[in-house]
Length: 108
Image 1 (spheres, helix red, strand yellow):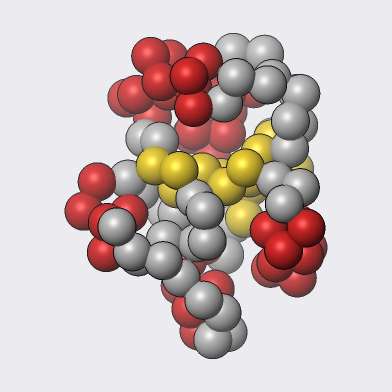
Image 2 (cartoon, rainbow, N blue to C red; image 1 turned 180 degrees about the horizontal axis):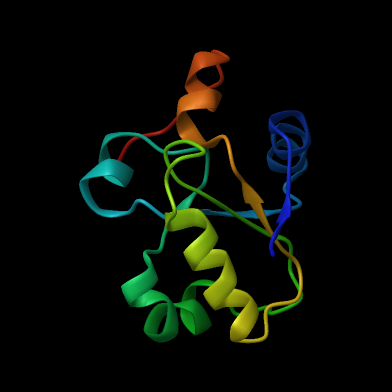
């Protein structure tokens, strides 16, 4: 099971540039809004795109999707771990929690 990260921990990691954030919603959802600096990566594309998007398998990576009911972030995190990524965590509460807290988002 993927370790979790809190909103506060993630906010600090993003501010410090200590993490790569992965938007597991991708597509139009990512274009509409995403966490600062997040890269889109959906489960179907992990095997093909992870080596390019995430070249350092030991770097801190956090996946997220919309909310705790969304399975995408866990699926992407599990696949990254299976591919040998060693420091993957999941922001279970997702972008809904982030925006409800009034934190900034970006759009494409």
